[in-house]
Length: 236
Image (tube, rainbow, N blue to C red; front, side, top):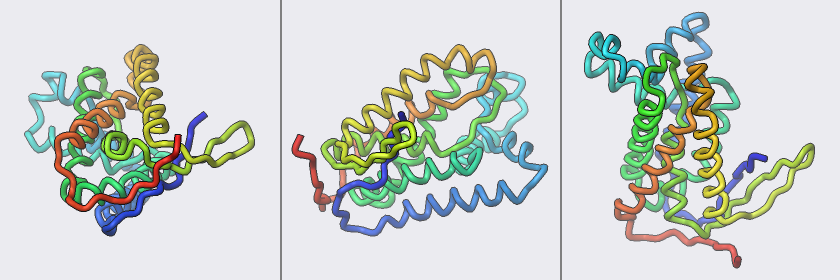
């Protein structure tokens, strides 16, 4: 069962400009992916995050500093399909707007990109030697979730719960919803580590974990904006 967040219940005081910019940038990058046709594999290999590029001396020796840094951030704007893109953008839309409102535009971007960096580094460390490129904004968006987790633990999140062929909507506290999400990423990361090591593929679960933890740390360290949003909390 995968809960699908639909919207939160926070009264924001500013427009979510950079959340919109990031959603637009990711969508534009995906449309560009669709346009390159047969060159898509080469594009993904060049801009994707490949752990061996940073851990294999033969790779490292042939790359410039830009060649090492660029894929870490460029890979955040590439996606493996429509579902991958839409799922990530839904989470960014639901949680990013309130984090941008709480911390301001620039600190929101800092959380996003440093979270993506934190997720990428943990993925590289735990998949050293893998030559399979990883793409997606999941690590950066996980940082937004981590920041939301500590900033608005009691906020109500209207959530869609699919059960077999039925769909239910329920308001869940962010602490429960995001705590469950993080637990799934963490446990699945352990379970899939052996499979990913053997096949070199799979979802970058540890990238999600690294991004989430980075977001939690940054939300605790960065001072929020003076004005606080109004949060409608659940009574339980």
